[in-house]
Image 1 (cartoon, protein in one colour):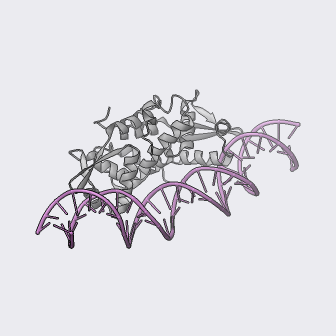
Image 2: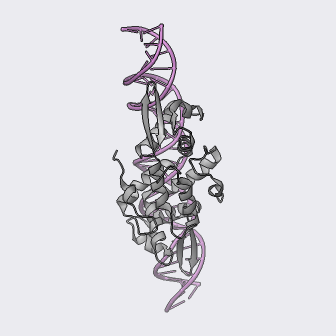
Image 3: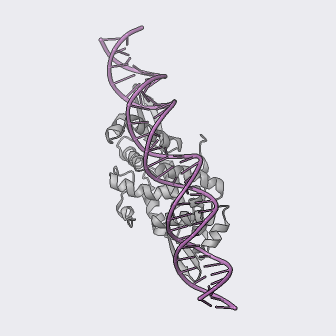
Length: 113
Length: 113
DNA sequence: GGTCAATATAGACGCTAGTCGATGTCATTC
DNA sequence: GAATGACATCGACTAGCGTCTATATTGACC
């Protein structure tokens, strides 16, 4: 899985048509956001004070199996929206705010607002 | 298909955890963005001077069948990212910049940038 | 009104993605 | 080092999605 540096060099959507490669990279990230469970996970991590959340806390917030949560965390991590760190028995996930910021900038249409 | 007014009242992702309903509505929009063809269509429409593009022009930009393009346009329209207007034989699609702006604001993490 | 062109809809098909139970891995503790 | 707990990986199942061909719809023009 490539590190996905498409975001850094993508112009706003409204400036010029995306080429196929840019679109493919971006679509990966948006697809990761296109699931309600993953959106909730992301907002749990993003809004948690301290900036990091243990997997067990995330799992407790849903009525889904632990492997399913683990799968969603992997998807979010693969597209660079989350990072993880193991400390002792626990794994802590943390937001990559730059990623969100890049997406936000990309969608920021001049005509909008 | 409901009109999807989730966006207007959703706080930034990082402020507080989304509830299931908010997440479901948002996921629909992001899922619509989670396809490379749809992202390219969106950027074609968004970057086109005059603000509107004929379906035939979009179809010409891809090596996909006309029904497939029509399907993608419908998906983007259903989540409120595009609107369409028929004039004579042609149908013109136009961006809804407020939608993009709402998404952009939603992803705009305080910690980012 | 018949024909043609532009677009949408319907139905089918293959592949992807979300979920689960079972199992593996790693660290802690006794 | 055996057992336990936290998390990841694997394999299977099902539903949904992207694509196609075929067909319907809508409007223009003769």
